[in-house]
Image (cartoon, rainbow, N blue to C red; front, side, top):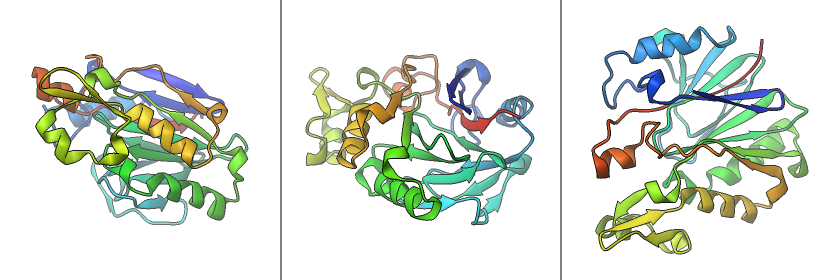
Length: 242
């Protein structure tokens, strides 16, 4: 696993050696044990689980109740972005090829975890998150900081051309690259940075994790498709120290 320090914030990201974190994808035999081992290393707070349904729905866990409580006491929210006070809760996301994007302000303990996928990036999800951070929490645009967590790079995020033509519209024209006669590379990271810029987030206010989650060290849905790698899900966990 890796732990990225963002001031007082910590973003933990697991790899294959930490085990599959999914209850429904890949070998799910020991997923509860894998999660328990992570819980033992985290502050004893609420553990909020972002269900990630590829929608534009945003929740505020400070004022909204979870949709359900699942194994190990995880509080599950059916949304693709969630804001929470990290003095009260740890936020969990289980990505495969998707990007855990962090929206934060150095003077606030309330931060957002956003699930960026090829589907959610085509919705107003990012815009809604910025608006919620400003309106509900009183954070000015110039004080918003973005951290783009570990993400699959374009050389590993590949789709057969006949499928890509059905999945990606004109908004993706600058982010699709020919791989060979049969595949297209998809630059989800570059598309994400582009969309943040269009929402008036300055490049200087964005940091990007160097970890390529498609390199083979992490679970990847795309790699599982084209080179028969074992499938599963990683865990991205946002917290502050005790």
